[in-house]
Amino acid sequence: MYAILKSFLKSKTSIDETTLNEICSHFKQIKTKKNEILLHFDQVADRYYFVNKGCIRLFTITRDGNEISRFFAFEGSFGTALPSFIDQKPAEEYLQTIENSELLSISRTDFYHLVATIPQFAKIYTEILELGFIVAQKRIYGFQGYDALYKVKWTIQNQPQLLLRVSNKMTASYLGISPSTLSRIKSKL
Image (cartoon, rainbow, N blue to C red; front, top):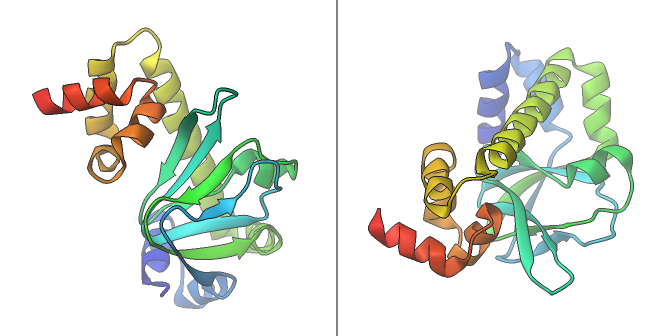
């Protein structure tokens, strides 16, 4: 149940088995169905998730009812509605599993307890934040002024699982293009 999480933690820092077990003891396994909502709009995020199997998506809904995907987390990565998790204000987005998933869930209280008491976990949290910031910045700045073909090629290079496992509709909303444009480009590549 904790093998993927332990492998992830060991890949990020030098850590002994006792400390790994202490960290893992704060995570609870949950199994979800496809399209299960983990966090609703206007709820406060009080859980952080590690994906053992499956995928979670962070998205919002525009005033005209269109879904805009903001983030995807696949196996071996963490995900939550981070602004809400940090500042404890209502989320302006939804968190959803888009496949049947096996997640490890940790409460905000336990998460910050680990950050405060285990230096290796604090280091990993900093790396998670930095990586998330870098990916978001690359996506935002990399997409400004670029056409759909460039965006799809960027995704192939940087986040290929999106094109393999996520629906065209969700991927297109993440890339800021129409699903039909995405289909047309994929058929040519």
